[in-house]
Length: 159
Image (cartoon, rainbow, N blue to C red):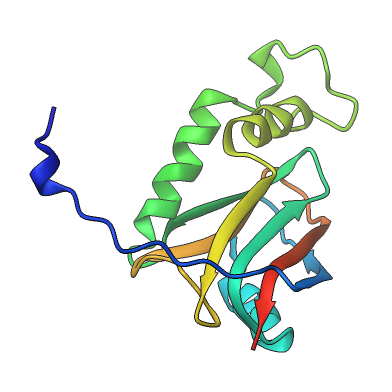
């Protein structure tokens, strides 16, 4: 347990939510892998003149997901892909009973459950409050290309 002396917090800041804006982002994937959505999310925040609030991202699918992860070293994404494949293998001998759309169908649902379908990112001073090495990613869990839809919604105040 750490001492309270090593923790600091800024003074609270409040805003009244006066804006709700949304947009539908459509992404064509090329199969399994990570797609960086950070630039698109930031452009949306800019387009709606957001100042302070929250951006929610929600993917409208059960075989693809969203995550915030490191964007500096590409090997992180390679290793994450590897661990997801180990946790939910998509080979024919894996023993899944749900395989309506092929052997990668059930593993894709499991990977989505493990990683999630929605994210919330604070917006402060008109910018996403992501850390230095963070990016927002869509994770395609299916081996074939798919068209994915992500709802972007900002709630907060505008400039």
